[in-house]
Length: 224
Picture 1 (cartoon, helix red, strand yellow):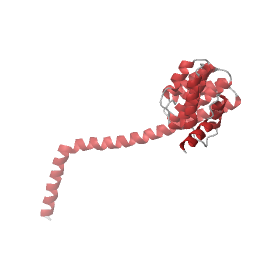
Picture 2 (spheres, rainbow, N blue to C red):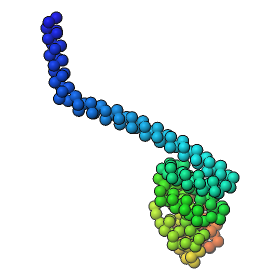
Picture 3 (tube, rainbow, N blue to C red):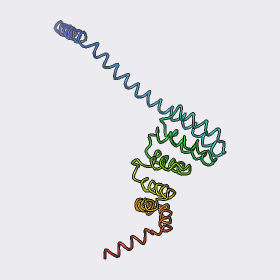
Picture 4 (cartoon, rainbow, N blue to C red):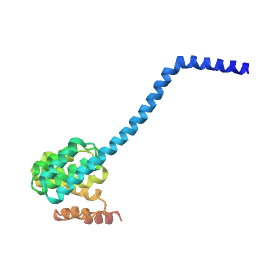
């Protein structure tokens, strides 16, 4: 029994010595791990809270849009942009606010909302949509160089055809028919045949005397 007590005493002394040397460091490591875990949970909670609040504001914006309340739409989007800029709801809100502004002939507001999304958006698909719509607003305002510049970036592949179609529209009003035809031809090739909009691009090429189907058939015949 005395031997057992002696061994316990030795172990206790060893533990005390170990703790004296490393205890403070271990305490800090544990605190760091726990604080990191708490911070992660806190961040997730904060993200959830942000999304919930942003969703509420977007719902208000959507309701105002359906009622044609442009003042409320503008205010709701301003609040989204100010307090929840990093959320998808804010980016979707920009597109909706721009549509409402355009429907009410307020090109300046539409352009501002779309430009914000182009500059600050994180969702590449929503940013691509914003670029296409912004180029359209700039086209209507006869800001042709700005419109071309807006489209002169790498977009996700599924948007390249639409970008070339819009580029063709800009070139046509500038009187650059040959370049416009080239852009439309690229658009027609890039847009999935299952997408109905491709027929609209085809109609433009037919009107310009460059029916793409005929060109494809001719190429197939020459290959035989």
